[in-house]
Length: 159
Image (cartoon, rainbow, N blue to C red):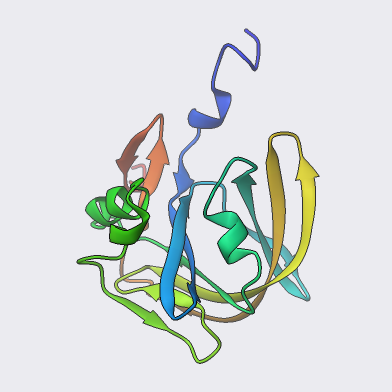
């Protein structure tokens, strides 16, 4: 098995998150399944990995604040819309809220973070983006949407 032949990154479930901000007064966002929380507790940091080929990231990279919304297990339809190639329609029929500094949160998300970009590192064909968590909200009563092998699901406790 080689890493090139086997997409090992698809083997382990990962939370599905939307990263979004207001750009020229309109919501701009993308979906990531590379969110790592708890990278640092003091200061609170998280990371995302963004494909260098992304046409959305250059728009978000200049934002003062980014919203990171971990989507709920019932929001798989929202993921498909937010990941659509139709950038103008990504936020159609999806509820969202913007903070005063432009971070966009997706309504109904399990976890909403307001972040600033701390650092950006080269990481092969991706950029590793370190985000400083400035504010957050968590709905512990709901399950997060997980992605594994290009399918969506939810966490199930073992007996």
